[in-house]
Length: 258
Image (tube, rainbow, N blue to C red):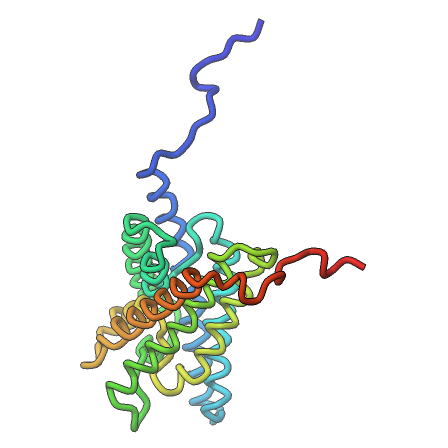
């Protein structure tokens, strides 16, 4: 006769444990996203300086580094923590009512610690100066312009996250592709004009490692956070308006049947 022991019972995480596991996953994911993003960025800038490549070529390489690093890493980690890797995206999901503020606090803390670690490791491992990847405004771009650029770039990214990952559909499983491409698209103008932050952690990690903070560093926090609020507000608006009824049938499987 089989005896059932208490230790054979299925074990589940309590809320604190769930937050800690998600935070651990977010730490590793954010570290990997920024490690490869910073690494690709610093390589592209170093090569362009030695080879005389045009700024446009460098911008594309940098945008690809961050966009595809996000795509692959988010696809790997979304089951653990959501794969956000960005305090602005996290804040946007909380503002949209799609993530608890408690979970958001755990994730943001992990993201900030991870970005400092990523900046430090890249600075130690890669010969070029980590300051090459700092987010800086281009000549002729003033602080107000930089702030609003970062706001609009980030609002685009956050809204894509909300509609592809949070709004469930038959295509949700490939949401990381759209999200990574959204970052790539936004980085093309972003890298050139503002340094292409869209993410306070992305700007903070390399600035700490380089011990270099421009006087306008605050725009890389408040611009993305404001963009996240704009995206969350529009998301709430279209949800309140029952957007599904405006263009129905987009996820009907019958459309694919012959």
